[in-house]
Amino acid sequence: MNYDVIIIGAGYAGAVMARQYAEDNKKVLILEKKSHIGGNAYDYMDENHIRIHEYGPHLFHTNEKEVVDYLSRFTEWYPYEHRVKGLINDKFVPIPFNLTSIEELFDKETADNLKNELIKEYGMEKKVPILELRKSNNPEVRNLAEFIFEKVFKYYTMKQWDYSIEQLSATVTDRVPVFVSYDDRYFQDTYQMMPKEGFTAMFEKMLNHPNIEIRLNTEALDVMKFDFETGKIYFEGKEFTNDVIYTGLADYLCGYRHGKLEYRSLWFDLKVMDGTYQTAVTCNYPTPKEIHPFTRITEYKLMMENKENPKTAIHVEYPFRYDEDAEKGNIPYYTVFTEENKALYETYKKELEVFKNLTLLGRLAEFRYYNMDAITKAALDKYKSLTK
Image (tube, rainbow, N blue to C red; front, side):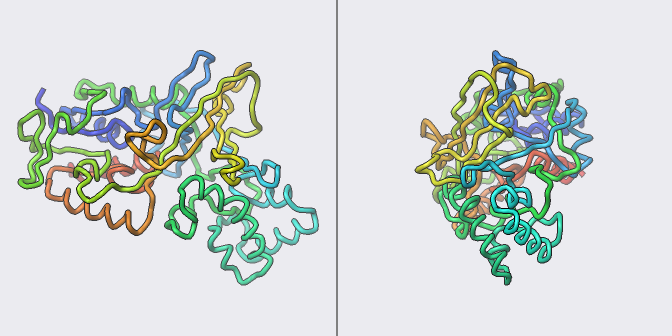
């Protein structure tokens, strides 16, 4: 087959782009180093009929109707609203920290006063970053902020990122704000649901097209060469002048010549047992790592449409510094947003501009965080811009 486009990576970015090209009657080759499609959204049904998310819980939520309409071509949905609890002072209370959390942790007089002060300063249904709360002119709000910072953010962040909150970009801390509300849902998006047959089945339908060929267990640089001297890309020894979409690590493509970008990784300890393990799908442990070395536990049957099952399966989640050669922590999950890393990424990005037919797309290639809906929208938009 003579390919019109080569896509490196079969996660959201690669799969959406592949489908768009294929429907435009282009011949597409996908190179995927994993043994499966779907990237980190890959899931499977275990022997107890519990759908396990191999790389940790993935939750679909969005305000983008365009994304819902597009993905609905490849899956049916069931409604699902995610709720998280965190262990604070030996109690599991709603996360993000909200007005209900205050009621459950303080006596009624103190709780009523704190709630009134928050509502007076910020208004109801407002999400306020913890760093903003700590700068409040109101001493009672500042004291509450210090309590929340210590009990919810500090140790969880230190475990998750191996940095203090102050060392990280606000894009990290803003993701889990304090919510001045009684709404216990983790997300407030218009559309919140899960694919009926799982994410893997959705990807299978998306990539089921006669114009798409997939090669699994294939490292891109084993079959491709990127010549930085000439700006030419080669596939299986021949120059390839058509579009190349790259969704992997930018520093890897450059041979790590300026050093490695920093990522955080995760390792999941899967445990199967009888009954039900916890009261929420996900329970966070924002405690010092000496007490709980893991960050959270997810119970998968509670995420399913049919929760009635005598067995259960949980993932105990441990953060690691990313190391591709390590036994645990060998998958890049989250970019570490420090000034040094951002500058290093820009260096790699500029060097890759020598390849005029190369497009970087996705959280690894662009060194940024994407939710599933956001990368779907980004891929649809990128396809339009490349083919207009």
